[in-house]
Amino acid sequence: QVQLVESGGGLVQPGGSLRLSCAASGIILSTCITGWYRQAPGKQREFVATITSRGYVNYGNSVKGRFTISRDNAKDTVYLQMSSLKPEDTAVYYCSADYGAKNYWGQGTQVTVSS
Image 1 (cartoon, rainbow, N blue to C red):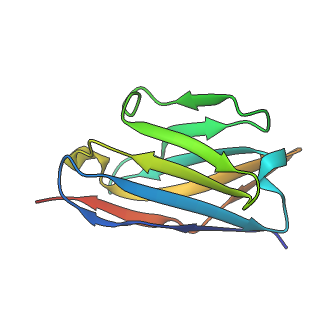
Image 2 (tube, rainbow, N blue to C red; image 1 turned 90 degrees about the vertical axis):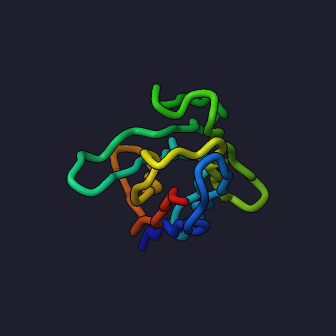
């Protein structure tokens, strides 16, 4: 059974930083396209960033220059380093992994940016 588990969410002030982690069981993230998506209340799920098995990265326009996706192959964990956070970054952040023809999602972790 495949399971993705996100961690690292919380409350942070505007301009602050936070690092999210995504760990998996049942699949090896370094062999997947792993991504982060977010969903704010009343809004559609939004693409944040992806990293391929070869390490190619891609970012959504709203987070370019502020967020960094990375992967630790030894820990088989994918991270999302978020900096210069804004109130509009408030959302539930989800980890997603594409493995072959299958797509898996975590349960999400809440990030709230507020003073």
